[in-house]
Length: 275
Image 1 (cartoon, rainbow, N blue to C red):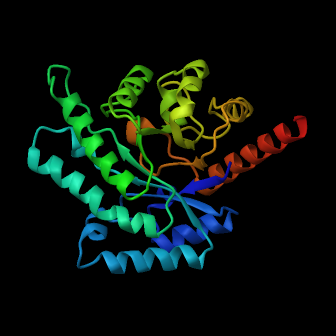
Image 2 (cartoon, rainbow, N blue to C red):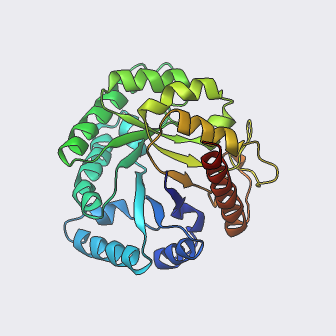
Image 3 (tube, rainbow, N blue to C red):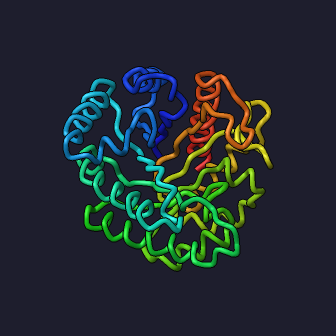
């Protein structure tokens, strides 16, 4: 179970600086996502995609890092505006060859921005978009997963299970912070793990998306035991965020990442010794 670090923790730095910081903390795997470190529009543009690929490849090689996941934030796949929805789907398809060439083991997308319950067609629009994206990802030999998150079309366990049934072959990227925020029980998470490709963790609590290490409620030993029992084969990514989205606590990034890294390593070694 490889440990990764998400570059979103260092969105205030240029990508080479962010990757260098991550590498110096001892990581050999990194998560990238849409934003300042990965401009999806520029990566999809035929006039600039080669330059983007060469820059990313050189930066990863410079710091001896491999991709654990790439998150493409394309939230318009659920909206009623046909042009904007198709634009996001087209962007997704256009960057797949680059992600494959960079060695990404898979790609994560949003479930689309949440809509009011009286918009009865929003769910079907999302299903149709995800099916189209999954077909393209499978042709590129890249696993596709959706991340259930607040303010998206998929948040609850029931919504996750329904979406997995509707789009056969789709997988999950589970953000433990969102699960803890929504008070999802480990017994419910266990049933999702066979469908889970990637996992992101940080200290959090009920109603608190991001917390300092010493105030969070994530039980790291229970987390590792749960993943080992489920024979989870994906990466475990430490994901902290700079923004105060959903009133998440601003934390000292390097300090928090190192504390969580060491705790995860310690739990892993402890469980190995007891096997």
